Image 1 (tube, rainbow, N blue to C red):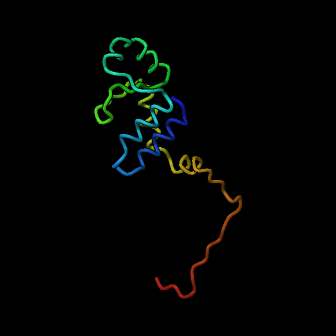
Image 2 (tube, rainbow, N blue to C red):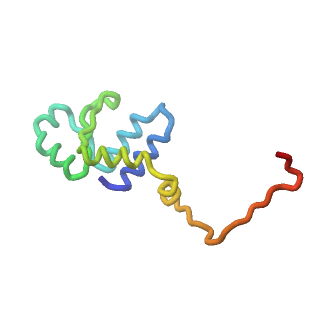
Image 3 (spheres, rainbow, N blue to C red):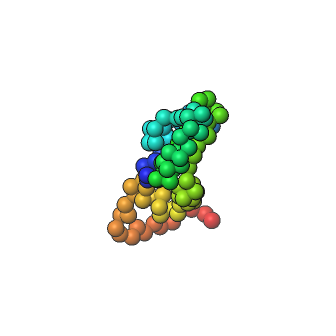
Amino acid sequence: MKNELITELRKVGEADNTDVLMKLKQVIATYTGPSMTAEGARNAFSKVLAKARNGDMQLVGRKTSDMAVVISLRDLAALIRSSSQSVGSALDEVGFRPLGRRLVVSTRKDHKP
């Protein structure tokens, strides 16, 4: 599975619930192609499986709220692992670079514990 797709899917997960399904559909379709009808997926099931095994997902269905996604177990595991990233990974992802020196922060003189 492409890292860009994982990043985009993570962004969708951070969105509000109103448009999550539509956003998921758009992101997946952008990276893996348009959806197939259930009949089309059934008739070309070996191709759908091959696509999933090669790291792509396949949307199946017409109505967004009823769509299914065919994904390999390996890619599902990658998605799950990506959602439980470390703080360091999250900082790397947003482009954080350390200052390169230590900062000393003193307490305020008028601060009362």
